[in-house]
Figure: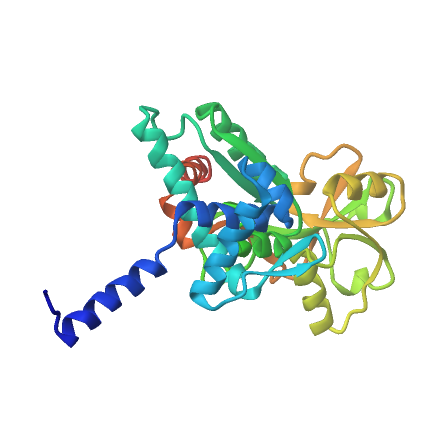
Length: 311
């Protein structure tokens, strides 16, 4: 009979413990599916497996690592804060596995796959999107338009791969490239008294009915912060989620629009009026999480943006 020393037994126990801690792709896919669908049954349908199988995968991971991934609220599964921090890396791993499987099956990178893009200013983002889709027609692209702050939140959670945002600098813990510099300007109807002026001051805006983007818009945040510093009260009578809506309201004489110079240029029926405050500037950044840089579609999108918007 063979006897092992205490030291060797401890080493074997440690190896077994490490092996038990290893994650499987099935577990990662189950976690990602539940996070995306917020429901175990819907996640099972997405993966083509049974609902108990998905539940078992999630429960096994929670038990092994002593952490809660989801809070069960009836039929809804809400991801925990711990999972929110892990999701970007988890989704990067699954994307890379998908790319690897494609290459092993003889498909070249970017012949398949998908890219999720978000943008706040379509005048900057759409030309990049169009060029990318022409170069890589087999990549499935999903594009969303929303305020910059909301885009950053979606990027942090792993819901988006790259985002085009209006900001003064790249947000901390993220990477990015500057696409172009812009100024915050006023959009007025051709019949408004401001239309004959080359520029106006912040004080001139006091009492004027303003139409701005939603409160999470960085353009709006920058203007209101500067106005508060100058002690100029602004009157925002309407907040809308798209530049097109602002343009229509301005044309109808509802109020004066606040936008970026790239948005106001060459818009029929609208006159661009400069704001004299030189600090009312921002830039359009293409931002991504550092770990997503290794994904082929993200690399290709960044390359396309750099070519179209050289600095």
